[in-house]
Image 1 (tube, rainbow, N blue to C red):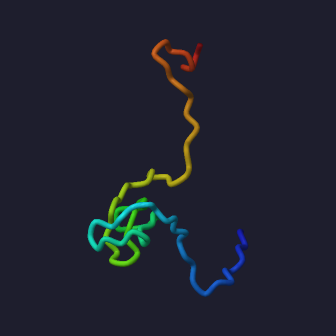
Image 2 (cartoon, one colour):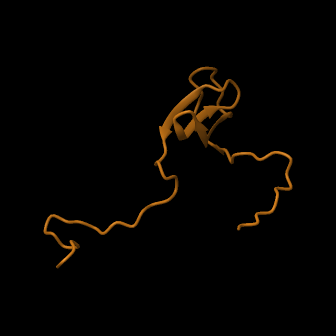
Length: 84
């Protein structure tokens, strides 16, 4: 069984990276940030205005998050296929 320590912070926050972009909704040039959110459709990478909460961009993340399965490379010549 795992024993993970309880967080010491009262609240946890997603790290938000500022973006050099102007919000098309309110015109703010300093409040646009990008970060990852969990919504009803899964995980999303979003760029949002922190003043008016307008969503500038929203892109679905990979289903498995940052996990990338190791898959043998396949080429047109068949190199890397099993049995060769």
